[in-house]
Each structure stands twice: as structure tokens, then as C-alpha cells.
Length: 316
Image (cartoon, rainbow, N blue to C red):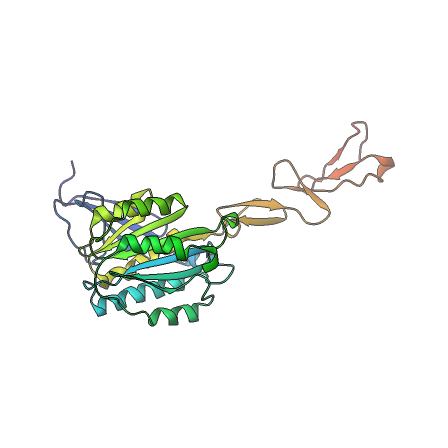
């Protein structure tokens, strides 16, 4: 059993995660914490510059239909709500925004729900960030379930700019709240997840952790976040960038003779005109020219320069 002050460091390419086991939640020097389901263990994430340059060079965000669902109830002070808007703006900066890239919508809620803008409304970062500055808090109540239901019925709809399921564009909802929902969230969240919407739940300060877990997608360790104050919520931007960003595998090295094609999380090889892909899926050979060598079909491998023929007696 680890003592209260023992910890384990795990080094990853982008960040170092320190796990502290403590009898009561405690705030570290950054103030940023992701708390486990039982509320006893705190996971502190500290970002560093190691590996940062490579990620900025090769990181391209996958196209998303992304909806922010933000709590602006009375418990969220005006200055704190401004912090939420800064967080959203920072998130937009990390994404590729466009009609064929990521589309963003915002649902603002308290006791009522207000759709600030739909997925089809803004396709440039400048316009999108200006729209974020115009959002005002609604003040009373915390109807989180109603907000999720509204997002599903009205925002993740094709007429509102959501792309058809046939396009395989991921649908993501990020919920930010600091309180306990005043309505039921379990059923409506399960319905959203069943419709292939990936849900991330961010809790701030007095947020109810059980409700966050009921809303979020699995695995919960990757979809439930907690920060102690709105003042440090922007520290989650890098974590979400890592989550929502896909590395271009072709730029990280490949074994293709000719052309590497990025297939989102993987890649495949293609050959230039006049060549065909060999069985290894990577090397290319010149295509058959059956009028050569008396009608026998010959392929010349680029890798070995060896002659391959359908007539074993033919020597080149």
C-alpha cells in the first residue's frame, strides 16, 4: 500500500502524469486535477515542452462535428464564465476549423437552453472566436439533461450542419458544468452515446462527480475531467488537443516506395502511374508490358531490379 505522500511518475511523449494517493483531495501547484470515480484519488497532469515541436509539426486534428454544452447557471460568476469562453477560444485555436474540417456549435444552458450557434454557421476561426465573445450567461438553474437533449435533437441534426453518418465524421460533445443537474441525465446521455456521440464531461469546483460519470463515454478515465476552479480550466486545452488531434502517420515515417496515403489513424501505400503495388503492400513494380520479349509478360521490381516473368525458362 502506498503512503499518502508516495507517488509514481509515468513519462509520456507529451506530458508527465503524477498520481497521488491521498485520503482527501488536495490541490497541487497548478490547481489542475482530474479526479477518479470515488473522489479519493487525484490525478495531476503537468505538461512540459518535451516532444512539443514534433507534435506541432505533424499534428492534424481529425474532422469533427463538435458541440460545446456549457453551464451558465447562477453559481458561475461572470468572471468565471469569461474563463469558460477563453477555454473554448483556446480549444478552437487547436483545431482545424472549416466546412470540410471541424465544425463547432455551442449550447448554453441554465434553467433554459439557448443554442448560441449551429454547426453550419461558422467555418473560420476568426468568425467563430468573435461569436464566442458575444455569449452571455443565462444565470438560473442547471438543466443539464435538457441541454443534452436539445443538442441531440436540434444541433446534431443534418439540417443544422451535422454531417451524415455515412461520412464517418466523429460527433463529439464537451460538457462544462460546476453543479449538480436539476434534471435526469443518465437516460438522455445513454441515448446520445447510443447515437455515436462521444461525450466528455468537465466538472469544476462543486460539480457532482456521479453525474459526470453518468454523462460521459467510456472509458471514464479518458472522458471525465475535474478542475478545482475556472481559473485553471484552460490547462485542459493541451489534454484535449492530444485527444482530438490525430498524428499524420505518413509524416512520422513509412516504408512506401512511392506514395504514402494518410488513412486517419493509419496509412496505406500507392504507386505512381505505370507501376503496381506488390503483395507486401509497400514496394512497387513496373506494370506488365506483354508486347515485350516475344509476348511474355515481365515486371521489373524497383527494389531488387530482378526480372519476374510468367515463363520460367525466360532469362533477362
